[in-house]
Amino acid sequence: MTTSSTTSRRIHELGIELPVPLQPAGLYVPAVRAGDLLFLSGTGPVRADGSLVTGKVGRDLDLDAAREGSR
Image (cartoon, rainbow, N blue to C red; front, side):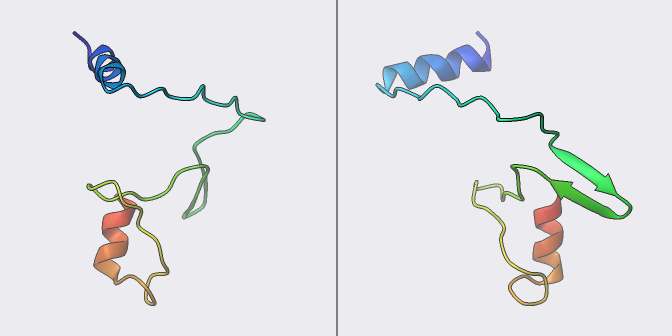
């Protein structure tokens, strides 16, 4: 059994009804590199526990936390 079908079965067993995903309004790429910068679209850094890494390096995050978020 695939992970996809296992997940779908479990969602059904729990009685969860997922909404139909909206179609994008345009053509998007997940990331664009310009020199040493990487511009992300619709995504951001996520910790192993699923929480988002937010803040400014040096003000809200130390360098190690910023590095972890960029992995």
